[in-house]
Length: 59
Image 1 (cartoon, rainbow, N blue to C red):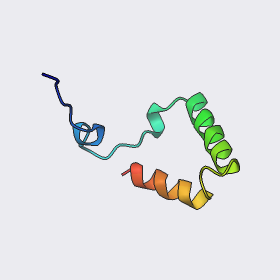
Image 2 (tube, rainbow, N blue to C red; image 1 turned 180 degrees about the horizontal axis):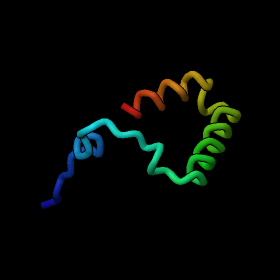
Image 3 (spheres, helix red, strand yellow; image 1 turned 135 degrees about the horizontal axis):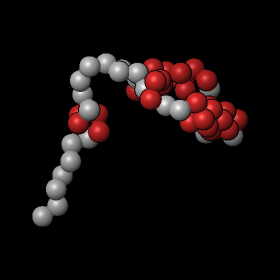
């Protein structure tokens, strides 16, 4: 029988925490470069879309 885990968001509910302090600066830069590339190549329609998603997942 396979053990079923709850989704990440369900396993990590609790007090509101920002990831800001746990991300190294190099990772922040890497994510920003990936987002620029995705937007430039048309995978993401616009920066407001990116901002809206980042706000959604940060809650």
